[in-house]
Length: 355
Ligand SMILES: [Zn+2]
Image 1 (tube, rainbow, N blue to C red):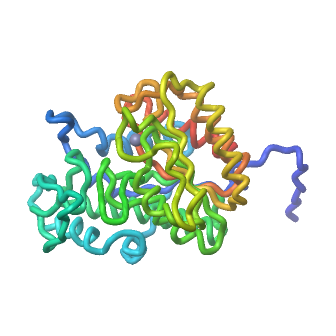
Image 2 (cartoon, rainbow, N blue to C red; image 1 turned 30 degrees about the horizontal axis):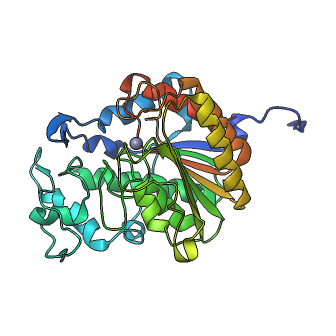
């Protein structure tokens, strides 16, 4: 006879009871450009396959390998529900490129004259807002897989199979707007997840990447059903430069549902903690039932693209504070480019989420 002991309320919750899962896709390796344009110079492309691989390897090394699951695949209607179909088609059409060939936008439409012509590679500037983000032959497959991870995670939570999901999305998504890709992002993974969750659960997005998520803000700027809160580097000196200011608070019905917290000066664990606590309080006041976290590790002190000074241990606290306030959390990977410690930072965050 099997004896079942009732768990006393003071006992720590076991990992299995958290019903946590880490989703990934082998397809991410397909997208790994070599170099990018950066203010007139070329430099190594930091958003490469090493990022995903080092996180997966470190998760296994720390004995969380059993949480790793390859994502399910979905059709692209969920992506097209959030993005302009012509942009999706443009990225997809690049599957016809030769191996190693890359599409860079060269001419951008400006405000007075911005007529849309046929979708072709010379008109790439219509759908892109920077020159640093290139499309290669397999970019569509990788970006689609990243969106699948976000969607899979959203459905796992909506169907109550899991309450903590960490999606290792690569390429990231929070810079991708309705009809514009950029900032290494093609499809907005967090927005695609939010779009399927918001009908059933009160949904908020907390963006903790070093850079402002201009795409996510743009997609939901008039939408009161998805609260967007972002803590990021001051856009006066930091990418994406044209959005992320404190007075951008949403418009029309969405007024008050967009909260930007741009930070300048020396931002260490202590400074960041205060803003994080404040952000979590606001998200709680919204009545949030499911929190989507755009988690970027480019807030790490050694990150080559970010200027904040967070320690590796702080990501544990970050995850812990989040799960204490929001038992249903879907965390989706955005940036983080210090390859040496990226895996450890992600594992610390995961451990925090697991309590
Ligand atoms: Zn970033």
